Image (cartoon, rainbow, N blue to C red; front, top):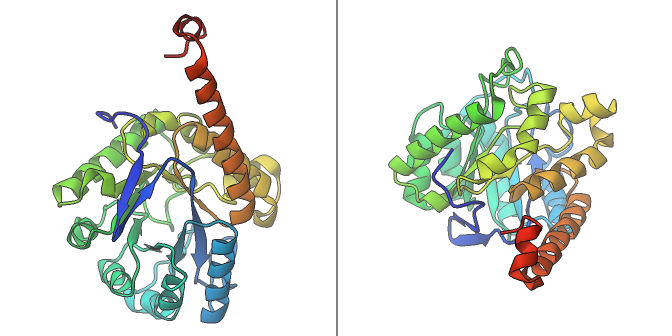
Length: 302
């Protein structure tokens, strides 16, 4: 991706603009029976609402609701089944007063979710199914997240080889974002997600985070979701419930490289870590500004 002016400073969603001068936390709410980390825990609408409310209290800026698992090997569900799971949850989550994102690849589900009060479409297919979701976002003003995934959840880990994972992922996302803009979306309406854990090897996931600044340089808001992913389990040899520290490390380093929206399970811990990291970044920038120009040049600071 090229042609940008550095990390985005705002993200336009339906009915609002999200400032990106501080880390934005998207709390994960899975209303599925088979998600890798918390499948089945929040199928009950009351449990789902209460969990969403807890995440808002812990510092979530928005809630990302998904009713179709995208774990490796997951089977697709029909639009009717996906909506059956979503419908009783969405209205109560929308009333919490924070933006709601719907994690879906289906136009019918996204349209119904927006009608129910959602303000963001999170498309893990990155428009590979066509322009319908982009056209819907353009008509409604909804924020649109485009994620990179090779294949489908069922097949995505079959081939994780890349010549240059960052350049290849960035090129696919640039093309998808261009399609969304051609469909009528505003540039600051479309966020991109490198798809950590989606068709990537351990090394590929690590390299994407290490070189995330190359993606952020496009000017698109960067959304990232390393939370409890299997690459952390491989590194640390722990189950999903014990990957909080790994999630924090990945998020903090992604923040330093330009990520601005963080999709996570463990909201309180990540919120605190990212707020401290951002405060340190700002203190460093302020100190650089106070130094004489010659001293800044000698230190390699513009």
